[in-house]
Length: 164
Image 1: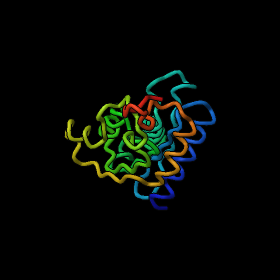
Image 2 (image 1 turned 90 degrees about the horizontal axis):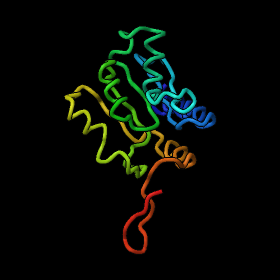
Image 3 (image 1 turned 45 degrees about the horizontal axis):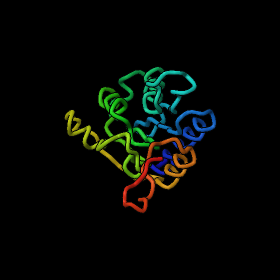
Image 4 (image 1 turned 30 degrees about the vertical axis):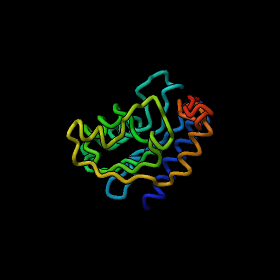
């Protein structure tokens, strides 16, 4: 399997989360070509704001294979990890992150100037290799279909963008 295929697994997880009423984000942990775990956002249905797709996948991988199996792994995610999830990736020893969609591409206004690169610079997470834009259109489509992100819309007549 390649990046495109692994991101397809993450997209399937995002679709399941969407159908259940959770944020449509999916993640997959892979090490040496072996899928260790799948994860999806469950924060609405579980009533736990920490159950993001990335942390769900990491918990499942650790439970099934142990923490050592995650070290050096790749995490595929349909959406750029938030700071909480990025810190979890660092602690778990994830070495490569493959993203579909970025917060800035979506136009989110609730993340400020955040990016995974800014986070890595701030905390000295120099070992993370980053690949972006894998199956971007599909990742963007599910978030737009969900429609609950706080994003900037097109500029109004006055030139200012409005929030949706």
